[in-house]
Image (cartoon, rainbow, N blue to C red; front, top):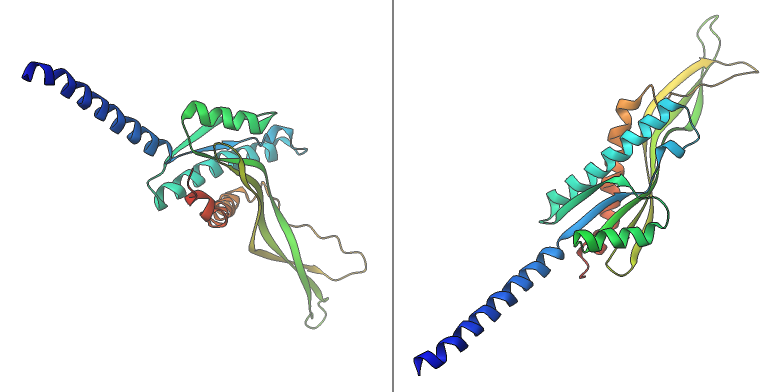
Length: 212
């Protein structure tokens, strides 16, 4: 009798182990997200140094997103190093299937620039001329998409700006204003892009928590 029951017991044990393994695999997949970029800085109409800066910012943005997601959850984050070109939706879903991911974030475009936000007149003392004082914000503007296995869950355009500096020059009938140079101030742009990433993750909080 024991000999008859043993094969059945072993079959049941093996089936149970396989079921647990599959369930664990599914749970693992549900916690994996890809960070992908289709933004090609080389296609930006700008001087070479600005293209290099934007390429560095796009790579940094992927790392910022991955780091911030890991801090707030147990999610397994995979950063795709290559740029996805053409037919992006199909390629994103293909990568998700290949990497066994449940969601993906795509960086579609990126820009960083100084924006003039206002000016005021400062009265000169004695023989000094009045001065025009112009204020500038440092801004980062990024377009994102978040994907599930079957659809695009949400497209987002995130603009983050904060005050950077003010510049003054003599008031005259012909005043030419020169704002800060984005490449010359490149070390400050990384912080703006990181804050853009945080603002975006707050924007898609419900999508990140959504069941697959």
